[in-house]
Image (cartoon, rainbow, N blue to C red; front, side, top):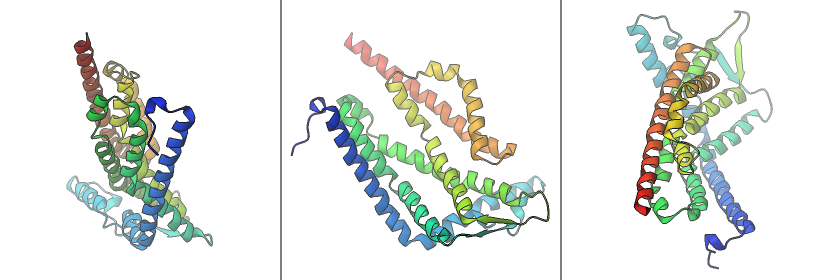
Length: 274
């Protein structure tokens, strides 16, 4: 059966189309998650528990930096003063299943974006489709860069701070596996979505909700917002918050530049039609 023209589709037709795209997205996550489940032992030992070991690349670099400036630092310790445990019968199995699903989401992200684009693109003009050909590649690249930033920067900073924090020598840190994995997962995926800011600004500018003037006008408020976001996704020390805030501010400035390009192109098109 031939697919209906976008102008001929009713509201229910659009819902049906969206349903099939969501089904494909769900299947892709579960298929990629199934592959991740097969390699779950490697994922846990190398990726999930990597930031728990002091030979993690981030700790090595920060230890060298601390030594260079002659600072006392917990980054140069031999081990972390905490253990990870599972306190429920299904704890490890649940952790394995959910970690595989989230890993499946990360792996399948380009396909997820592709399916969302397939749903949105019929409503765009031919010129808009052509100008947005790199959308899937760019958005996927930004997401993966964000995930790597979250994993190699936010996660180790958080683990180092929270794992070594102590109010008394009478208390030993024994973290539940779900708590530890939640920190690694939320830090990485949240950073991935934050790095999608330029893409979001691009589309908001396209529909006229945002302009470069607005972004420049509210830059000070954006700075406060960035610091709040940094405080939420990082441990409560100033150094970590600054490290996280810098790339977000850079992304905001890049978003202003992208917004300006979109507006300039729209003005050129408007002049041609006059």
